[in-house]
Length: 506
Image (cartoon, rainbow, N blue to C red; front, side, top):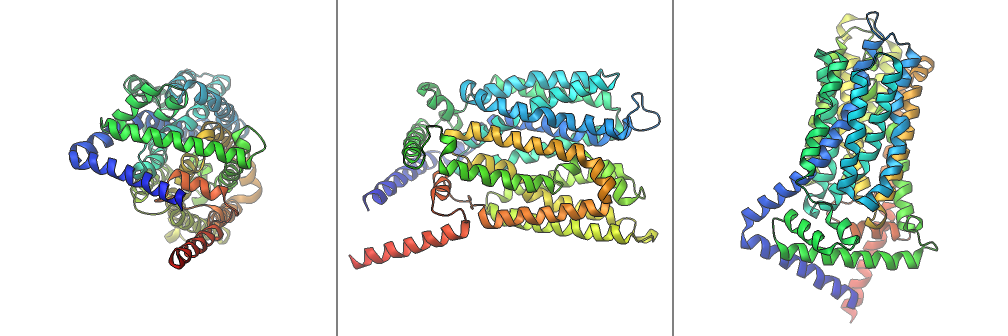
């Protein structure tokens, strides 16, 4: 009872601080807060957009390299290496980013990644052989791996709870905008010119770097209390009282986390504590099925997939750009939806919809109607697949990294997760030509559909709902007696009812 009373008092105090801020100058306070957090987020979002350009670049590059007029003649096997070389080095970058985030900070790690990103695109723009293309893809892959974890972590740590869903979902939209941008440029420009254009966004991010602070949570953890308070005050609309209160809450949560580690873990490494291990396993099992469901394969091989699905009967360039545009619109709308709806229904409905679209497309391709009146159907089904896949499956990956990993291991856990993601991406990208040769297009989309349903099942049984919950409450779920979401909810409900009965009896 005393603990509940203390938690109630803390929540009441926090509410009073926020009410004071907003009643003092509600319009100015809200506007300054949103602008500050939005400007801070732009650093991470510009880097995420460059990652989208890197991932989407091979979709139009490979058809140009494999054409009869190519200045660098390329076989199918050589093309698969050019596409997948990016994913060979992204796991290395992701593993490096964890220690770098913990020692150098989130913002500084993002700045460091700009150098290999620019070097990579410059090598691609100057390439006269496969070697330089592979070197360029290696550098951009390394930079992608290094930049993805700190971008997600930075957004999660600067956001107010009411904006957390929007900001942690925003990288998926910026990533999609990068894909759309590189598709659109490649549709009208030679690939070397597109590579030169791709260097602009990293330099824009570099300019923003000099005007934004480091993550206040990281600064406070490193003992730089004054800098942390100054940065958080700016992020909270120049309200020092609220910033001070939030820092106190952060310290209290860190002390609580330390007690959990001591009680539940036999190791001093927080990664081996039960809450973090459970979160780590859940996130990576879901990510495996999400990637095997074709989420990123269709980004890398969009043109090839559309050519095979339609038999060359439609103009695939326009359809590929349309899929990228649909992904931008859906992910942008999802960011707004995350302010009002839960993560679970969006993810589950997305998995069911994309799985059904993929299996229906598989059946259509297997039957292969010859009529000219239906030549648009495969392309339409690919677009429907992308639409359903985008607003949930594609979005939830970054959100889980930002919300499910506790702060004390967020850097390391996100680095490991991004490394595993990109290791899987390497195999799916490299094996795509072999899979299409063995399974044909109908078998490939049947596989995508089944993997979508498997990922949906994982989300249904194990993914906790984080909407309206604090990060401490999310962590409490992984500390509970069961890994099943519904079982924990039922248990919490029973405990709440029993507590109310005891209070009434007293």
